[in-house]
Length: 187
Image 1 (cartoon, rainbow, N blue to C red):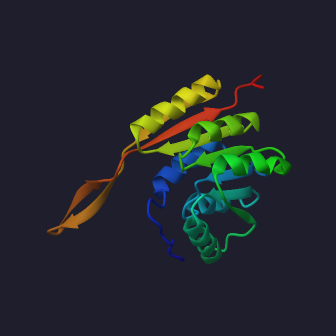
Image 2: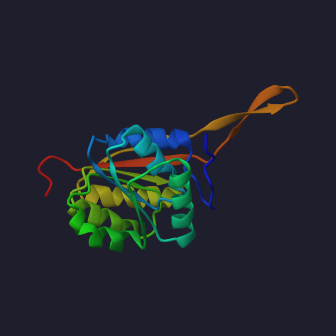
Image 3: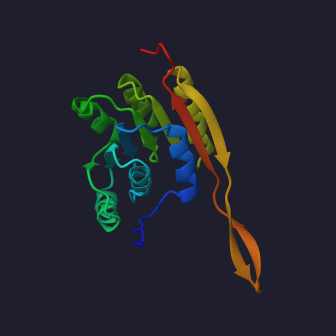
């Protein structure tokens, strides 16, 4: 099995990916945007679960795009479009992809703009991962303003580690998963 290549700030932990993807409720031929894709771990998991997804992995960091490309190759993930650029601008430019069905947002730079564009593009389901409480509040408020806030989930993980022949748990940073769903009748 291949090892995931890393960059600073990532990758998203597998448990968080599992919860996030379950909240997205991905359908067979969805167009899925992985915004702030980093290492590509979320796209890899999504494509593994649903090989028919049309995936756009977006990141403003050139090194993230390079690492994601290598990870896609290492994990034999095909038919993913990697896009280097600011998320809101990329989303605006991608009008030609038709609809954006679902989006995972791992990078929260310009989050208000990103959420507005996803709303205008009628993204059915959006999941934002955040570690800072200020970001959580900003995302929740923006989603409420847009009439698409569904829920927020606080996830705290601990991993077992050996200590003198026994096991202790070391906590990992908590993650907040904010879920937005386009309500029936919205736009």
